[in-house]
Length: 279
Image (cartoon, rainbow, N blue to C red; front, side, top):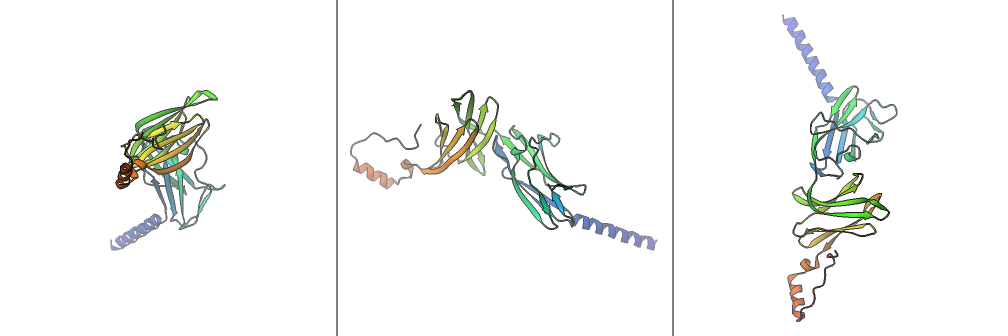
């Protein structure tokens, strides 16, 4: 009986030792999202890292690679998988020697349709030697934002096409932020939504569209400053041209300076229109 007990003890210790070695020889996979919620059309920014803690060479994306890197995304539930519409790999050829790691940033919406409102779950998986190495699941919401104002752009050479600009706001990192959503009709094309920055709701944001396609948005970001954004909108292209922060001359001037100006002028003059009141 003692002999059998000793054999069992040795066998058990050997099995535990093998388990420990197998546990140490693995791939560490992490996935991080920039935010927990994204406005419809906003790029869904993500970053992942793969650490090769095995004794093997990891090859992904090379001609003879046996290892695979897969992003799994579901909507509203674990089994409601979102299929990618882009067949291209979101990373190039990657080779990891033992102990090496690899980091990569990407926009998930450039591979998966993530414009529909709702909750999504993302997970990164590395398949090596027949085993799956998974990151922790990361959930995020796609939200429409709270509407503020809309504007419509028409195109001279395309009378049947119009572009809808929607100014919405949403709270992020305990700050209210202004977003510009852009959609085409017909066609239901959704352009990348633009984060215009912190929004102070004491003054409504303004949007102006010129006949040439220059879209200008001005909104208050602090008590004494505005953010001025210029976007060039053509039938097949939308591009941010300029962003600048400008002081409000009516508020940022000191009380003393304004009072001195008031004392110097005995007659009331017609109020001069501020630069930002261009509409």
